[in-house]
Amino acid sequence: MDKVNEYLEIAIDKIVFFAPKIIVAALLLWIGFKLIKKVDKIVSKSLIKMQVSDTMRPFIISLLTTVLKIALLLIAVSILGAELSGVATIVAAMGFAIGLSLQGSLGNFASGILILFLKPYKANDWIEVDDKFGKVEEIGIFSTIITTPGSKTLIVPNSKITDGIVTNFSKKGVVRLELNVHIPYSEDFPKVKSIIENELRLIPTVLNDPAPEIGIETFDSHNVQLAIRPFVLPNDYWIATFDTHEAVKRIFSENKIKVAYSEGIELGLIGK
Image (tube, rainbow, N blue to C red; front, top):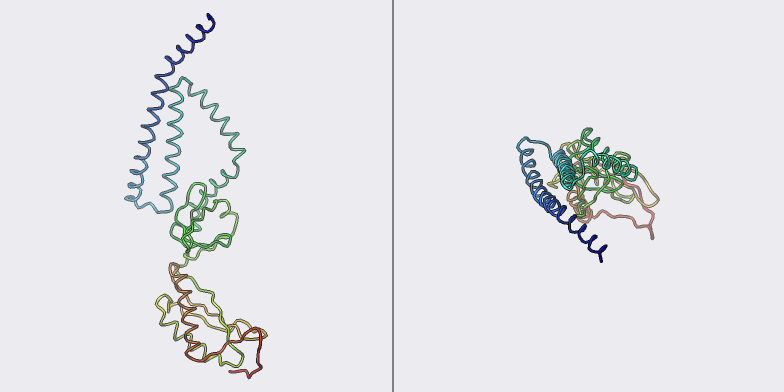
């Protein structure tokens, strides 16, 4: 019983000694995280007033809040009785160990810095990465967030972007559609080209300058493959694609332009 009483007294002493510090540290963390959220909003508004780009703002805010949270945690640990010098040593050792295990994340961080400074793309640009097409919503510390035309959110690691090929559809301000249609050998190409050119001028999403490009791309065993290359604004990419396909099908029907099927082909004359 004497030993039990002795251990009980030690436990009570420790609780009495640490309880206030734990309460203060917990209160500090609660208030600190609330303040960091307010700082986040204030800094965000300030950056908007300073006309900092949409690309840089999320990165700056994310970096600032991360640093503030780490500093807050260090202060809370010091309140519990640990010396900051000792804590710093432990943090450095943990950082080294974590760094070894998270080399990919550190690579993503470095790639994020490169993206922000080299600017291969920026927020609101339409890009294609690893056969994934979409609009850049945010460039973060470790990844880039892309929204596809189908409203899917893609979270792409920054290192994957800097290590691969990125197609920026918004860099030049316009993008060319890569569309193809087929006509039989018996059809007159000049007539078909003229019909398509006239129709493209009536599509609101297709630009007249630069002018659309229409030509024969290749010949196959059954038909002639035409290339239709209108220029559009990046934001109109998909709607212009749909409008052009719909228009071509309609004018082919209206002008009685036939197409060849892969089976049941009949031989015919070659037009001009």
